[in-house]
Length: 74
Image (cartoon, rainbow, N blue to C red; front, side):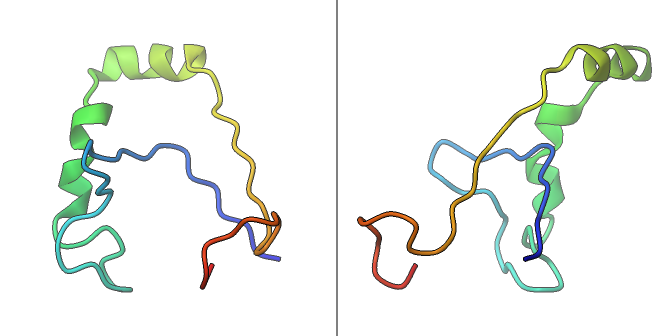
């Protein structure tokens, strides 16, 4: 089973994580990467320190239909 590791991801308060016209060629949408730049702007001298002290984020993924309650189609 393939696995995907996402290190950092931003989502807006209205639930959007991608820009307009999302496709396989533009998975974050047109200019989608610009939406996430606010979270990662750091001076080069502090970027190394920030990486060193940042805690790893741990998530769990569940297989399809892992729970008794599921949304149809998922």
